[in-house]
Image (tube, rainbow, N blue to C red):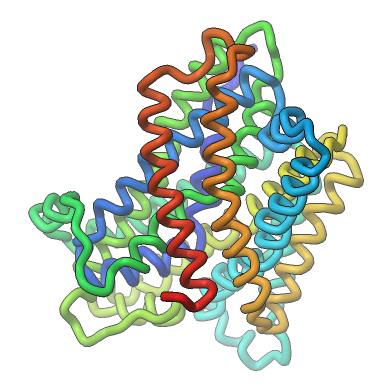
Length: 406
């Protein structure tokens, strides 16, 4: 029986449309209207370019990005550096961000269950953690894929519905596609791109592609299916992000309302959406939070498995122990209200270093003659180098910001 061609790229979409993306896109729209829409479109374009290369890598070699990284780093020193970078940016970083993912889902549910506010400890982080645990523990790739398809569908329904209700100006949206940087918008642009083009999705996608299509005797058909999947799922994620930004632009730009957190988003939309505002936003935020809460631990496990050369599958205790550690840390951070500022700062620095390095590695690897007809074409190289230059700029500004230089 022929398997569905859809799947791996939906994990990428589910991963980058998290609570961080919701608030980043909302604040960009509220502060600058549709003026930064071009940055969001570019980030989707960049994601497609990089994810296509990682998908091609996974299909052709039958290995994830971590495995390929370890396989091609022959020097012991280079391997040690690779392990440190991947562990810092992917594993430690995802542990820090996992608390935000779960907290985002909790913020969506809490207003609908006011009785929980009287409890000494909110039960929702644990409930959400158990839900994510139940999906990941089964160790069935198809179950994970199907669950995330449902969650992405719910996000689409919620955020695109709010987009339609707010009736954004088509002219303003078209003008927003013209690249320009309003005063004070530089860090917002970096944030918009940084929440979409992230290193851990490269590891997640390459590994999930090799799990979905492990056969090495049918590369052409598998690669065709993988590309079709990318060109469907990633633009859908972009459409959700655009809907979020446009909704905020239509509702809050040039108003006196300022969005500083997820808690202020739903109440601020109440005049436009009426009594359905809490329900619609809860649906979107919950789906965003829980989908990221599933993909972040999974990506960390895939990345560490690959870079350490661990020959384990999704059902092994070692693989499970990696994602379970990330999940438990996220539940604890969310339950106790901990704000791991130092850890997140460290993860941002590591991510800032890792993204251009991984991009350079991808370009180099995808030009190897061992890939034969599957290596990069001239167009692939031109587009990927362009993305690389932007990631270098992004990383430089992120590092400067992290160290307080800007």
